[in-house]
Structure formats: C-alpha cells, structure tokens
Image (tube, rainbow, N blue to C red; front, side, top):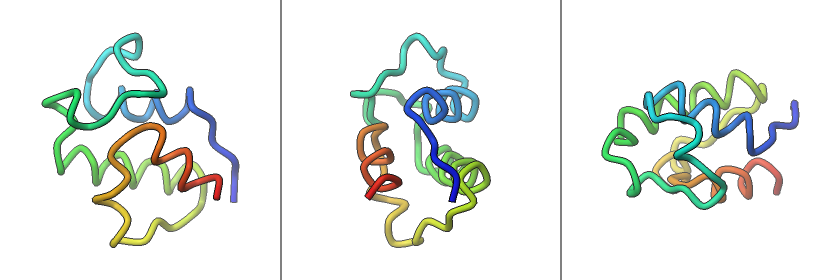
Length: 76
C-alpha cells in the first residue's frame, strides 16, 4: 500500500468535484460543498484506491465524508 498525504487527498477531492484547491483543507467535509455529493464521493474513493493500491470497504464509503476521516482511515 502506498502512503497518501493530505495534499494528495485535497487534490483528488478538488479534481473530482471541480472545487478550487484553496477552498479545501484538512477540516473540509462533504457537507461544506454542494458539489461533493454521493456521486463525487464514490469517484473520490475510487481515485484514492487507485493511488494507494488499497481497497476501501464499500460499507466505509459513506462514512469517509471529510478529509480528516479519509486520512484517519487510510493511516489506521
């Protein structure tokens, strides 16, 4: 499994949702942005899986709705 950092996750969220990177930070969550919806959520998780080579459980996808939660999950 490859390590992924906060900046890489912010980049993935930004690219997927078309939200400017400067508007996203470690404290950002899906409810902060109307564009970070359920479809974007799935796309974000798929991109993270590709980058980290780690499969994220389907049951977890709905919970990983913030930058902090994603980092915490990936680094457990």
